[in-house]
Figure (cartoon, rainbow, N blue to C red):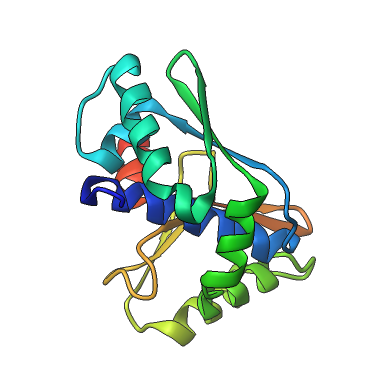
Length: 180
């Protein structure tokens, strides 16, 4: 059984796998997710060293073996890799819902005629509490998120790149820590 301290990490892993399946379709293959030590510490609400995180992630992998399969953990320096096997991908595909908002967002942003206005329409369909901020940092053009965390608490950093748009999705804590 998975310890409660790992729930936030488990949710992020599943959300990220589901996002990939929405974008690329379901495929029963191994997927690798990469996390810096700092992000993992935020998920676990701890301040682990690399060695301590190896232990925590071994415990995490054992706790999710019944759902995500025999996950392999490795790292280079303080950058960790969680390799989720085909069984985990199958579980995510069969047992998690494709969130209506995320599907609509991805289907809109992947079109070549996408604009920030069209994306904001997608956000506004799900909430009247949408935060929109033009960013002046040079890396992203817009920060958009749901102020009350419904339907999700992620921070969407959106960039206009000629005839299309791209995005990066961060947890609130990672976004704040990265200091964009």
